[in-house]
Image (cartoon, rainbow, N blue to C red; front, side, top):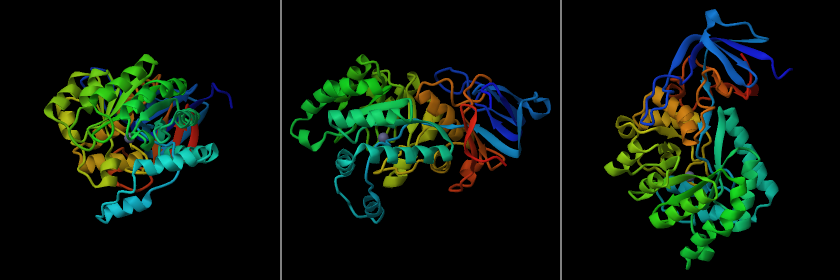
Amino acid sequence: MSAQESTLITGISELVTNDGEPVTNDGQPGGFAALTDAALVIADGTVAWTGPASRAPAADTVVEVSGRAVLPGFADSHAHLVFAGERSAEFAARMAGRPYRAGGILVTVQATRAAPDVVLRANLRRLAAEMLRQGTTTFECKSGYGLTVPDEARGLALAAEVTPEVTYLGAHVVPPEFAADPAGYVDLVCGPMLAACAPSARWVDVFCEDGAFGADEAAAVLAAGRAAGLGARVHANQLGPGPGVRVAAEAGAASADHCTFLTDADVDALTSTPVVATLLPGAEFGTRQPFPDARRLLDAGATVALATDCNPGSSFTSSMPFCIALAVREMGMTTEEAVWAATAGGARALRRTDIGHLGPGARAALILLDAPSHAYLAYRPGVPQVAAVWQAGRLVAGSLP
Ligand SMILES: [Zn+2]
């Protein structure tokens, strides 16, 4: 098959293009938009044409999807996939109402440090394949369970094998060996660890929260990362009110993630700067905490993304459809807003303009639902509805009707 070969997908009941009017404070075009009775042509790995099925041009291959919906692939902009071990007992105890303090993140740190590369790589690839089958065509992957120079560096090198969106999270928690010297750990994160990690990474992230890193430490980590050429992202305001969103805004971060506990000043910061508010409802689900108030952010004009936060402790889901369903049911989002946040919103959080939409020129990363409209993602929660996935114009998961 030639790379130049074109594919026409036709009979699309609803084609979500996300090339509508601006909807967010950043003024960029690309609000939620959809065509009905539509067709789309892929050529050379990109979207070459969209429009009414009745006017579709000829192509080398024709795929008739008989009244099903086509969407941009999901962009999961927040995931922790480089780890070993699992923590189902901790989850079960939490759901049973028992305080379970078995060490949390540090349990995973211990298992990850002890695991050979082959184990970490196999786990990572299994999760990446799981994401793809569920329609995620772009995902971000963080380190953060190594917390030594060699363990963080190998985690990022492994992540770089499966995604270009690699994030250095040496500042996840202070490891036990630095319990008496947290400032020394910040120096390590900003110095030798960063030097070893930056070549594999695109982003730097910090867990800015009580019990993790404070405002000054977080700002130092982000400044060091930026000096090494990395873009900034922040774990902010997850467990309570705090300085995370402010730190993200001051650092020019691409995204402030979690945003569960926000003051009015935080909401102002998210609407007066280009920082995307990335909401991670899997974490609130997995810890039985109140969900973030997406409605408040959207009404204020913030740019909202949805992501899984896939990790073995607080949110062990890789499913963007699950997050969409939670966002619609529990966070006040419309189905259009939630699907936009899981596609175009994730793209904004990663500062990508080639994904998250399906206008001509977009990367041909798209999904076919076994359903007539995007709303089914929330309307039929828990049901696998992603029938086929195209990546760079090629069918890479599922099958055609
Ligand atoms: Zn996270």
